[in-house]
Length: 204
Length: 151
Image (cartoon, rainbow over all chains, first blue to last red; front, side, top):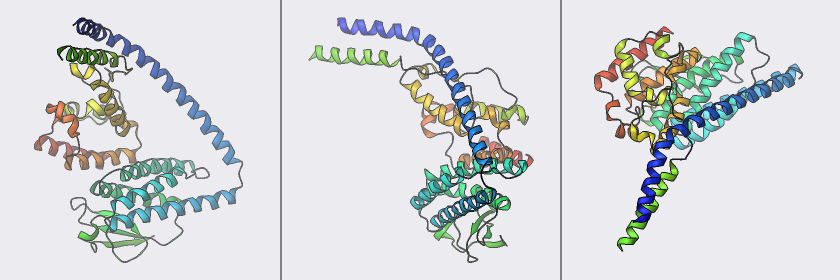
């Protein structure tokens, strides 16, 4: 009984004091955040300096190589969804996430750099969502990701012919596009449910 | 036997008292920044009410805490939810996102509401009032769509 009484009073004391403890903690964590932000900025500067001293043609080659990887992993992801394979889609989206994050935007005009930063940020976020969600959710993100891919290819270019295909039914009849390596329609938004739904809009 | 139960209860209470020391911070701010979606896009009153009631606890810098959500271990769980929620989408910073990301988020908002994914079921267990009615869903989806086309 003694122990019970003792612990109850300790508990009451704790409750009384917990709000003051947390306020101080908050201040501390804000300071830490600020410091890490500053450190991040520094490393960014260093990276940019290294790149600017690199040979230009070598850089362009590396870029098209990296874009090739991005497109390949996007197509793998798309094909996994065509096959209703959520697991495979998750794996491909992880690869895609890595290749997107790895893409170097230096060497482009300032305008293109801004656009590419925005596209990559957005596309990487979609890839992240696809990697840990059920198939319906993966498909919703493929819609947005595909639009990002079209815009990115418009700036960076593609190593292969791609077909921009539209499925007018998906997205509540508002339509949704995807990129395919073949003219043959194989719908990643519906998979086996409606494999042939779609029209090729243009060749890229 | 009786003594043993008292002992266990005592240890439990002591343990609960102990975990109150887990350091956490409260997600609170009285400022509605100009980058906030409500301010930046002049959200109509009914949208403001819905957003604050059902979304802002986890997707803004200001959470309305209930008394028990200030206690551990509930508070610790809440902190995790809020951190993840804000990372995904912080309405307070909405207008500072790139236009592309804003459009993308608005589309995700629509998708998540339509699919009944948001607000999270685990959150609704404690916050029943945050549940969106059919009408509220329709209003929110309509507004998100219009806003997406306008930015």
